[in-house]
Image 1: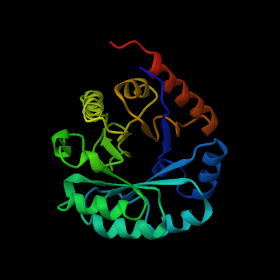
Image 2: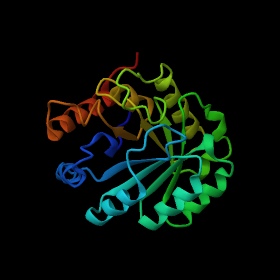
Image 3: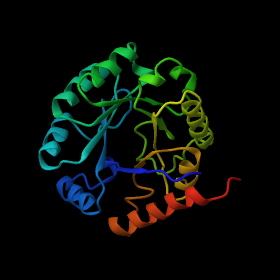
Image 4: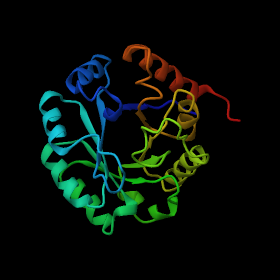
Length: 234
């Protein structure tokens, strides 16, 4: 596979939630420029790690790119709030959207990158008409919001789904990015990169592994990415 730039997007949900500013400073120190923020309404998914006001405060202290992943039944409300905050990318779930194209255009007209997120079992066929409008497609590899369940593994077909989406994007000659989220572990990263992933949401199984520093974990993530470029296809 040809080499390309892979974005490491640390998931703030996996950082030290009692010391968010300190966590962000550590991430910045490692030269990472993108922060993945999960905005969950507590209904679409059971957890609520970050609120709108928290994200507003974080925006004041850092110039990092905010990659916001909305998990809600009321996407329009959260999109409008994130537009006000000044974020760089917004993805929302296709499963909870009635007016998908309208939401995409609402994001894009404000100069923000737009994308849709798909739950593990959601078919790529839902992208038939909206794919050309999307800057990014976020593929969930586990069910949204259950990252705290350490026993939940990524779905068995996750690598195949990334491959299928990559082929679809190539066939349509698009520049849409593939973002992967959920158990993006050091073991899984080489295969995800080889399958075509561009943005890795890094959490508790990679960048925030316990027992090692963020700097040490970042090196391991980078090594795993390199493996993805050179690892022979099975």
